[in-house]
Amino acid sequence: MNVYSENKISLVKQVGKGEFGEVWLGSVTQNNFKNIQRVAIKKLNNNIINNNELFEEAILLSELNHANLVKLYGICLDENRIKYLILEYMNMGDLLKYLRTKPKVY
Image 1 (cartoon, one colour):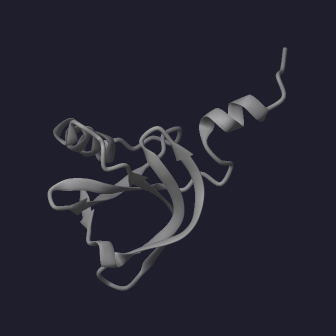
Image 2 (cartoon, one colour; image 1 turned 90 degrees about the vertical axis):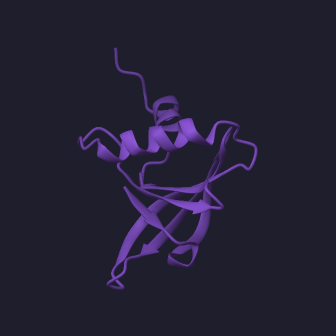
């Protein structure tokens, strides 16, 4: 799993907010100065209790690769706590909003 330093992350625009934090449109600069365009950056709340479980889940999610799953590119740490999750950007918004606004087909 990739671990990015905070100075490689650029937050551009807040696109959502949920129970665990805010979601931002942003970019991450790689070591070779190539940008991953249009990533989603989940900025986690400070009050997440079990960081170890979150870290284990992040490792598992980073290993999954399927067309129907959002890709976890990596994380950003702040004093051994996960501060950001770097995810594939979904240009149609979050899944719940998409499912609620999509016309029902019977």
